[in-house]
Every structure is written in C-alpha cells, then in structure tokens.
Length: 284
Ligand SMILES: NC(=O)c1ccc[n+]([C@@H]2O[C@H](COP(=O)([O-])OP(=O)(O)OC[C@H]3O[C@@H](n4cnc5c(N)ncnc54)[C@H](OP(=O)(O)O)[C@@H]3O)[C@@H](O)[C@H]2O)c1
Image: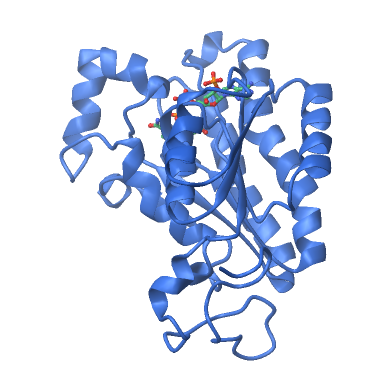
C-alpha cells in the first residue's frame, strides 16, 4: 500500500518536468498496480443509490475508503455502507441536502476536520426535471442548476484547493450525453450538464500543472430512478433503445471501469476529458 497522496504506480516516476507521475509499464508491479486505489480516500456524492452507489463500490473494490453523502443517506446502516464494509473498506455516511448552502458549507468543514485529506472527489449527485421549455419554471431551473452545476463547483473548489496544495488529487464530474446534446424537455438539465463539461476543462487547465486530474464521465442512458419516467414512457423508451448501438440500456455497473481508471494513476496524463460510457450512442 502506498501512502495517501502519492502515486500507486510503482517506481515509474514522471517523464519531463510535469508534476503528475506517469508510470509507463515498467513500474515494479506493472500496469495493474496503477489502478490500485489502496490507501486513498474518496468522497462520493449521491452514493445512496443508482450510479453513485456503483461508483462508490467500484472505488472500494479498487482499494479506496469511502466517504458518502446524499440527502437521505443515514450515517449508519445504509445498503451502500454494507456494500463497502463488505469489501473490507471503511465507509462514513453523511446526510446533507447539498443545495442548502449553509448545510453544504458545514458538511465540507466537517469532512475536512474529521477525515484524511480527500484524494478522489466524485461529483455525482444530480437531479433532472422534465418540463417543456415554455413551462419550465424558475424554481425548476434553479433546483437543477444549483445541484448539478453550482454544488459540484463548490465541492471541487473547496477540496481542489487542498489537492493543489498537496500536488495530488483526482476530481471526476458526472456529466451526461446532454453535455453534448440538447435533449428533449430538459432545458435546465442540458444547460447544467453542458456547464459541467466546460467546468471540467476549465479546472483541468488550472490544476493539471499541480498534479490534480480533473475529468468527467458522461453516462449514456442508465437504468436508475433518474430515468424511471423516461423508461415508463413506451414511445420515448423505444426511441432511446433503438438508437443505442449496444442494443440495451446501461446499468450503473457499466460505469465502474471508467471511474476506477479516472481515479487512478493509470490516468495520470488524462486531463479535461469527458469520457462517454454510452453503448455507442454519441458516435451514431
Ligand atoms: N441515469 C442516467 O441515465 C444518467 C445519465 C447521465 C448522467 N446521469 C447523472 O448521474 C448522476 C447520478 O444519477 P442517477 O441516475 O444515479 O440518479 P438517482 O438514482 O436519482 O440518484 C441521485 C443521487 O443524488 C442524490 N441527491 C439528489 N438530490 C440531492 C441533494 N439535494 N443533496 C444531496 N444528494 C442529493 C440522491 O440522494 P438520495 O438517495 O438520498 O435521495 C441520490 O443518491 C446525476 O448527476 C445524473 O445527472 C445519469
């Protein structure tokens, strides 16, 4: 196990003068060692269910200890806690409505005061409100932009500052196909996820020189509560399925490989990318 904050990539060291160590394949334990997250601490938002729960489990399977937060996650006894501790990792759960600005500030302060420095931040918590643009209310817009764009920025800024100081860190935003496309009936969501893609690149530009990797995953159509309404609409559900080259909806587990990769030193030279995991949707 390497100490938190350092590279898990054996003795490879960096090429040239960059700060984020690159391993090549000649590290003492080879390329697979670069995916090892032993000794790392990951904060995953919205890990109570759906994609966030799978991402937390993937990081724990790779060796990381997990701090989880969501609006209804109990401090003790959650299913995700059982998943993580069953893997032999530690789990600390927090209940926080992240859109409550004072609660968000208090949560960040609590995490910093209580836990080891965050090595991996996964900005996953999000919501979607489907309303035609002509009826898209101010409140709907504000709710979606607040949770999907403002909160991830604040978390990235507050934990990213520490990562920059330590010259190590991984920040992964959960973007969307609607970071690239406009979608249907979800103007606030598309605007917010488009902003997430731009934020990913903006932060990567600033923090890559300090050994902090900022990237995003853009999931395709994944079967979770977030897409329940879409899947319940026979016409839209059929239209979505017909367009996916892989011929099926995604599952949260389909995102496990991507999160471990981007959270690991195997991705040490990957900055500002938005990795689509979409069954081929975007290439069509
Ligand atoms: N599903 C898809 O097809 C898809 C596609 C592209 C992108 N995404 C993105 O992936 C992420 C996860 O989506 P999902 O499908 O897994 O959704 P989900 O099943 O609805 O889960 C959302 C998670 O976010 C948490 N959350 C919601 N509002 C919150 C708040 N105000 N404060 C704190 N936590 C809050 C929820 O907490 P509780 O469980 O406590 O309520 C839940 O754990 C989102 O950013 C979403 O936009 C999803």
